[in-house]
Length: 425
Image (cartoon, helix red, strand yellow):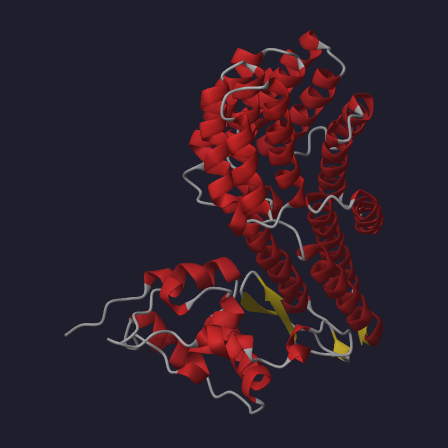
């Protein structure tokens, strides 16, 4: 009987950025952390997993594999034998506490996050750094962003901060050429920007600013204007959420000016949407409308961005920005329409944090439009997602909806508030 290829595992490996050799090495390192003895996984064993020859790996392979890829074996396409349940949860629960220590002195990083252990790529303690090492830093950023997209940024800011410290420690102890130096600055700048986003999502605004300042310094050292624009986009978004409309506009325009003629359509669209949000806060309807139109036009006229950090940006994000702008301008019917369009796109992604934000956005727009019953229904859908998400920023928005509902005196407001308290406790 022919084997059935494990396409779920293949997709997870592709997302992680590992080659078969790299994955085998990471599994062996995770094995040593879990069991105290060297692992024996090889690229041949990885191929056996991919071809479907192995339908349920033994514990010494399965548990490290789950730790490396951050998913349960069943989520990776494996099928447990009859009357056999995965035992990974018990092993993880009794794993030594030092596995969650991100000390700079350790060469292996194992993070206890979101119910799984995540092994981050390591760098040399001495010798010479090369482009392969820089790629490992990007792999780390990608892995942390996958967790952020799925669950939210809580816990990730500190993890990113410690990994940056680890990379800087390695860079001080190793040698490298000018090409690697530039790439290293770019990778560190990107990681610092990510750390700022995770802090922002956790409502740690001062920490977010410090990381974005660090990201700008690395971007300047690398001479990378696209990275500068990424940092400024984040800073503009923060200014908007803090109610500083003029600052949000100025920062986003600086990013547009600095990258004129050098940016792709998705970056242009994102920056124009940032400008629009700032104008909306200042009740500048004409300017806001023109910027929203530019965001739509530049998104539609260009192919998808090749920049890794812009993978999150899609039509749902444009509609989300429009919904926020219309809400700030008091155009509640338009806000509801845009919020629903955003939700329709985001629902196809199955990313829990984004879904929670989208349902909350619809609920707030409906409440502002006077549609309390529909607002409560959307709020209930958000509550269903709340236990799976660690995003203090989005949870705060849901709490604001609850408060607004109570203030409105709408029928069902008290019941919703009670449900919120029970779920959020």
